[in-house]
Image (tube, rainbow, N blue to C red; front, side, top):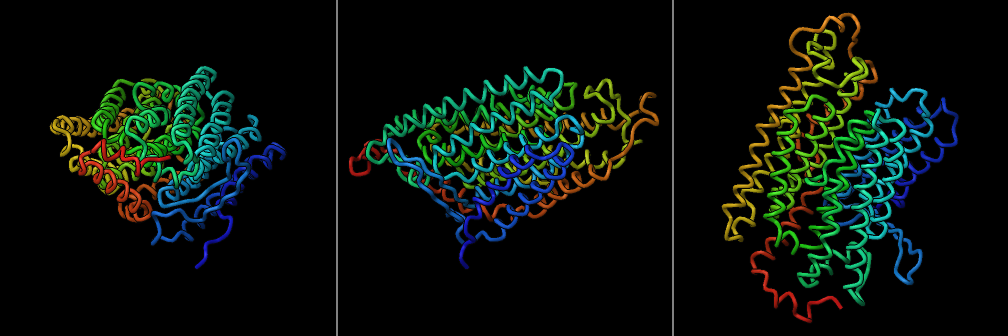
Length: 524
């Protein structure tokens, strides 16, 4: 069966045309058009999944290539999707539609501009996941700064200008570092210089170790800023607290995944020496993120800030998994990207539902007892909290247990003389699971248990029809991924297995520097 032609271009055109069409439409039609284009995007992404050949999951499919110019350097429109890209594309189409449906609170507050910016943001995110040209990857990676800045600065909370500017500065600085590494890598490849990501995956591992490490450093810093990771995480809680609920869903569900996707696709795929030489330190950073952010959640009073810091903690699992260089840990890290994307979207949506009724996010002001008037929302909150703390049968458990298993069987611990230290970081990360259970159960108790404050009696209502549609859909996805994870893992597992096998091969040959610098094996 031949592949459908131009399917990825159609995928990119849907949000781009949606952005332009909504911008030119009457204000009253903006939401309806956004739902229409969001549904079309979800349908195209589902069609992409249906047409994907699982027997070639590790290969790029639906490839389209168009050269723009070749001098002084090649610039191409070059897209394709393998199993990893496809997983991220499916997540993008799904979460985007849920965020559009959840945007009821926007009302008459410039909906045309809001939905057009949301569509432009989706276009940028999709471009990152399917780009096969590194320069094109960089351009669309940076493009998301524009719509996200305005989405926070215009429709955000009281400190929206501060939060939007902070987000812009942090992520723009990461983009500068990425560009510096991209230019340095290109200059070091001499006659073989290219932006073709397929060729780069085979050529850059042949570069000398010091050049690999220097080339990777800017990419790595840019991606952990986006992830985010300590000490570059401080923009995220402020952005989440001030952003409107649907934008928080997109920020946690999709934008953070741009960073984790880059870690796997570029840092690990192009520069194996970086993770081989600094894997233990990256594992330590991941473990610290897990535990520190989870502990910080225990002292927060703003329920949105709790979920935001929880995202920092759960993205630490991705760092831990990628740095472990084992098949199990890599599989778990990629599963965590999708799982956290759905769980965080549900939790931020539920935070917004409570805020719409109480007009506060402070737990002390809410006072508890909300389950009496909001039983349906309480059940959704229960499922979201259980998934976030890793209850077996839900997607969060699958991701975490796979990462821990892969980390404990990591070849890093066998290679490094201080393997016990590597194991120590993993034990530390395990305590984050206990802390997560603590703050999620505490949050659930503070919101829904106990006596209801007199001011809420008769003034609150349960989930609306739209809220039920969004919450049921997200909840079912969490349950489906937890019960049958193979529905997702079969798409990306060949890629993670291949990356882990290559990393193990480098470790087993002892990283013979002289062998790596054999002139016959070098890039000229």
